[in-house]
Length: 187
Ligand code: 5GP
Figure 1 (cartoon, rainbow, N blue to C red):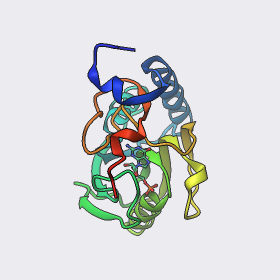
Figure 2: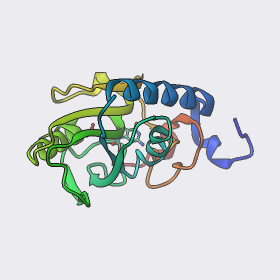
Figure 3: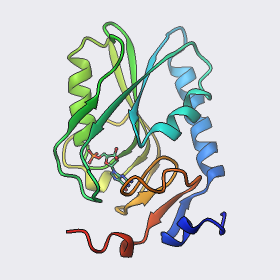
Figure 4: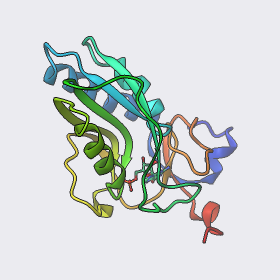
């Protein structure tokens, strides 16, 4: 842990270090490589939270692949989901007939991914799987199959490795639990 970074003072604990994250991402990359032999999947990064995970993951996949980016918003500047999902940036290319892997930072209520799954399957993807770094199954509000998940975590608000609070902390190399005093004044 880099104690010199002031952002670490805002964390209650470190959940996963950069080494643990790298090992899990490598293992997931190997699994996807095995599962998609002979195929050329399109990996879709859900901005912005999944960006750090995404760039690490694609380099651990030993297959020809394509990438694309989508942005949705449901949280705003809060630690609680509004339950509404809005598309902010769409894909650049068609996914008709393609094997799609949606790469997400964290599945919480499941609202974001169930919206994305419906939208992308409606565009004629021939297959669609979900790969998430973190999963909070205790918070699920809709039924959703998560195909690949690196870690299941308890119900806590986490930041780092791409995940933010109010756009800060994305550049922390580790993932930690944000101290509730940081968002105590939220209504
Ligand atoms: P869902 O639609 O599954 O409720 O929420 C998914 C989105 O909520 C994630 O992509 C992420 O942006 C945000 N989110 C959910 N839990 C957390 C968390 O613990 N920390 C952060 N930073 N974002 C979260």
